[in-house]
Length: 309
Image (cartoon, rainbow, N blue to C red; front, side, top):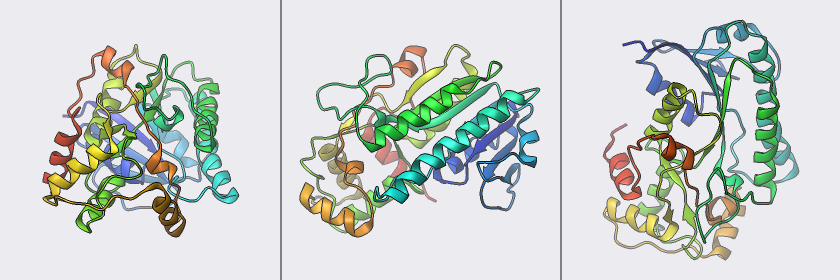
């Protein structure tokens, strides 16, 4: 049954974009992916080429869409040298500004524009959860990126289009992202705690990500900042223990902070991605009545590992 005419996924050729495209393709007439690289159309999922900076033929395709989701941004899984820092910021800010300009000029603009940002904007938190109303913003490069990103988003004048900055936690799914990499670590005997293991992981199952975007579309009262994380965060040591158990591997070597730093330099990433304690609460979704499919990380792990891809 076609519930929607058209769904737009800007920068939707990555992992999360594919999750959303697969979710919407059976309930929307068209799913249009804006990508820097051409791709073969699959059923009603159509890819249009854009550069994220300039107008083009793709603009007219946004007319009459119910939902626009912006997923643009260079992967932060890299070393934060000057070149990467500049690209991380530019790849988020420029497409957001472009979409704002385009949406403001449409005759029938999307009803809702979701900008997928990051829950890492909150401070390192081991004392209590950070929510949209009382959460404290952290400091450092990653937080500066989030602040510039959201500022650009909310500066866009779109009087006919509702806007939500969806602060995303760590998305768990089988095909890509962090989960399959952690599974491989467990299988190679490296599935112990990372650092002291006390840092919180604010995670969300990929199906809840997709479902909550539709839920936001259907709830006109929702706008502004919305956290997209499961209701119950989990400590790193407990998450790795649950993952080992689910994989049938009882033991895993721990990785102290000093070893993680060496490893991060070797593979070109930052330890912040592992060691920062992200304890985030989805207050807006909970108070609004959204029902999560998965609130328990152990149940989410079992579900993901049971899926065949």
